[in-house]
Length: 271
Ligand code: IPD
Ligand code: CA
Ligand code: CA
Image (tube, rainbow, N blue to C red; front, side, top):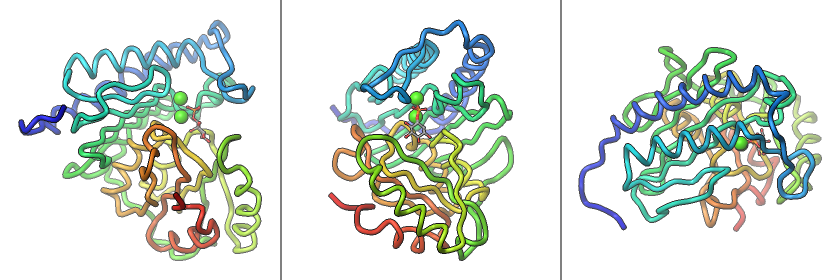
């Protein structure tokens, strides 16, 4: 059910930043004792795992968000959906980079995004190991801590690094041919294990772009809100059932977007 009342996006932005940081600190505490966490495989793939930490943090974030804004909708990786017909829908990943988290690698974060009328409008991505909070949104700019974000001004893939990623379902067949083309063009790839962080790094100009054969909305809605405010381009990721089931994903600075999209081909925005 939608409401005609004005939306308080400033209050939601403030809460997103606060909760991302709080959850990240809780996550850091659990990370430091990760050998005691119960871990399970998801979806039959041994690399796709979930721990008690993921579940605990998602319940914490969901409870706080919906207590503050009970009329809002919610999509979370671990606890599912609520009120998808609301104007404001929170899209969160309690730990993005779970494999890194469980193996003692510092590339993980808490990602809290907000869709307003289906468009990424607010994002907060908290990385406690590097003491970085990426945050921003429509009308708020994009920031890492208190520094403004700006995508790279590069015009060729040879000028820097491209984030890449793939998972078992929906599109791994595109991955190796893509890597071949990237290397042939003089580009180089990076996979750090967190789609939310790699998107934030594109917004920050640290990566030229980031391509994943099939990403989920909770990995990237927060980052897409930052990207929109830092001059980046993205594909039509949320088309169709992208919010619930994911789609191929490309974000990049304007100067290399078309070069990467041409390497991926029509599968990037195919129905
Ligand atoms: C994963 C990370 C990874 C990406 C996978 C995601 P998770 O999320 O974002 O970088 O390659 O597609 O599933 O499982 O760590 O939350
Ligand atoms: Ca994720
Ligand atoms: Ca996750």
